[in-house]
Amino acid sequence: DAGVIQSPRHEVTEMGQEVTLRCKPISGHDYLFWYRQTMMRGLELLIYFNNNVPIDDSGMPEDRFSAKMPNASFSTLKIQPSEPRDSAVYFCASSPVVKTDTQYFGPGTRLTVL
Amino acid sequence: TQLLEQSPQFLSIQEGENLTVYCNSSSVFSSLQWYRQEPGEGPVLLVTVVTGGEVKKLKRLTFQFGDARKDSSLHITAAQPGDTGLYLCAGASTDNFNKFYFGSGTKLNVKP
Image 1 (tube, chains in turn blue, yellow):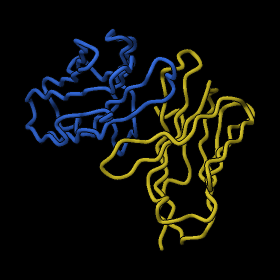
Image 2: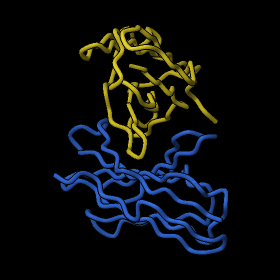
Image 3: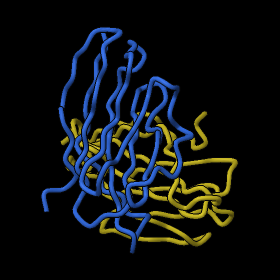
């Protein structure tokens, strides 16, 4: 299997612009997680889905952030409008239902908002 | 708010030395995990411990979960340059075992 795929790997944008991050989980995995990693706050869970349904979005920082999972093989995390403090590495992870504590992380998207 | 505190934050040692990394919290976790992350990559799961007092070994790595399930340690024997990386602990909420809280990480550098 190719593992969790994220795109783009790097994104540089200007404040106020819309940013869309993409994730393709491992085939057959029922859980999908979005995390954000910064030096100051470490790795934080933003939201997670089970069978394409958002289960817990309490980690989403504010209304500027939204996440969707239209089908089992694709998810997006959108920031609109983006701000410099959103600069971070965003990770997507997936896990199988039979072993929900085993999360497989993607390579991440490094976002820089100028 | 970080629920898990890791220490030390940085560790630079010579090849062959032993080391211990600590992960502490005032919260109880249903399970605790250790990950290693290399630059430009996502974290990779090393181990999951579930029972208070549990000890697991993975070659030269020994993981222990505290009796009260609030803390954990990772001990590396005879460290090698290949052990270099960021070590993260993550605790699963007792309310939701799918929800993990990550520690701030320990950045380990093993010099040849």
